[in-house]
Structures are given as C-alpha cells and as structure tokens.
Image (cartoon, rainbow, N blue to C red; front, side, top):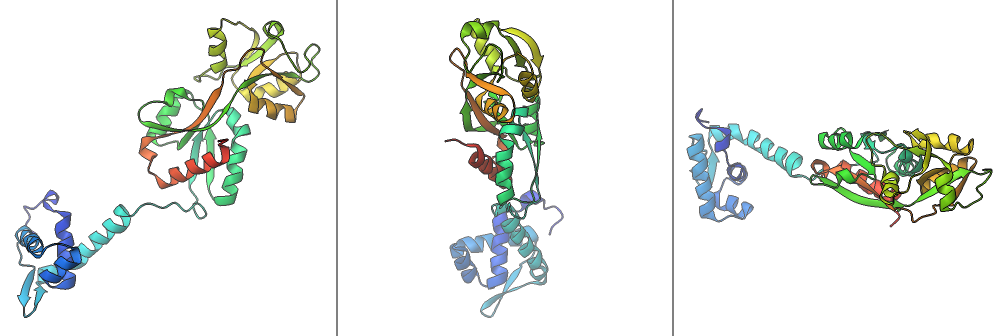
Length: 305
C-alpha cells in the first residue's frame, strides 16, 4: 500500500469486493456473490487498484488471477472481515448458566431484606456462578455510579433518576403503615390520628435520600412527636419491639418485622402515600446483553404486575 494512504481512505466495501474477487477470481461471479451489478463491481475493483497501486487481479484465460500483492493481502483481508462479522456485527449473547460475572446493585437497606432474597432465589436457579454486590448510596452518588458504569442497576424510589440519560421500569408499589410492639400498653391493632400525633415516634432519615413520608406529612402540616432519628430502617425492629415508640414504614417491611419479632401492624390514620419502586439503569448499558438479562431477572423476581 502507498505510504501516503491513510486508514480513512479505506472503504470497508472495497475489502468485501477484494475478498469476493479472491474467492471467485471473476468479476461476474464476484458481482453475483455480492448481489451487485458487474459495472459496480468493476468500478470497486478499479478503486482498489488505484488505492493499492497494484492491478491485484489479472485476466488469465477465463479467470482473473491474483497478483503476488493480492495473494499476500488475501489472508489479512479475510481475517479483518471475519473479525468485523463475528466480533463487531454479531449481537452479543449472555449465557447466565456459565457466566461468572459480578453485578453491582444499588438499593436501600430495606431491599437487602425484602427484595434481595427473591432475586437471589431466582439467580440460584438460572445463574449459579454469578456474584452480586449490593450497596446503598446517596442519590447523587447513585446517579454517578450508574453513569460511570461502576454499578449496573439501582432499585428503589429514586425520583432524581427520572431524567434524560436514564431508563426506568416499574417493579411494584407499596403504601405505608404504622408499627408498634405487639404488647404496647395503649395500642391494639389500630391507631387514631390523635394517638398517632401524641405517640413518641422513631423516624428513619437516610442521608442523601428522599424522605417521602416526611414530605407527605409536612405538606399536610402534620407534626409528629419525633424522639428518635435513625439512618437505617433495619435498626427499627429491635427498637420498636422493646419500647413504646411507634414508626411509619413501608408495608412490606412491616410484614417482615411482624413475622420476625414482637411487632403489630396498624393502618395509618390518614391516607397513605403510595410509593412506586422502579429499577433504573443508564442509557450506555441499555443494549448490553448482560444488563438486559439482569433487568429481566429482577423484573421477573419482583414485579407484582
């Protein structure tokens, strides 16, 4: 090749024509193999000859025999086209049964108890060698982790991610309920608004996260008697079960607490806000086969329709 030629001078279609000529050794047969007209194939061959400074294929009898330069180039061109076909154009496939990939999920501490067991159960069935890492991050860090690719998915109530550059899929919804210890001295299966406002409350305010209940109550100008603030929902179980405090929590978490401790569940004495839980991912991973498979598995494991 002329040293003055640059990579930008190469038209991939010319390599396809070169390969067909090397295989067929005939302009007519090469044109048929490529579904091109004979004039178009001849024009491409002429461009190749000018580009490479070599006749490449010379008519000998009824065939177009390759020159030494063409014989030298043929294996390289074949390899380039094979690489493009198999590594670039071929759709990526993810085999969950053999993969040992590690996925990074972003989710609050509630998810580690409520939704993660359902995800892991499904993983054991269809992806026995896959590893999962789950961490909780403030909302700004969550967006950055998805953008940078250090995290694959985020699961939860994350309104900040409902923006350009991110995809989302609804998984389920839940309301809020009130919990207290089962042997609470004054509460038995229900709580009215007066009791709710007077009771000592424990509240969970994760750093850097949306506090939906607080926003809901503030909008209604309802002020509770908050005596304890926590950063993690899972700290509530032993605290509520061993004190006269009450707490407002998602109903699925309340069910978990009630099944594993001295906890009773009571409807809120006012209409509960409804939380839509989604999975979020960045657009750069939208077509990634592994990420697509993971999203499907999470949806299957958690969606309630």
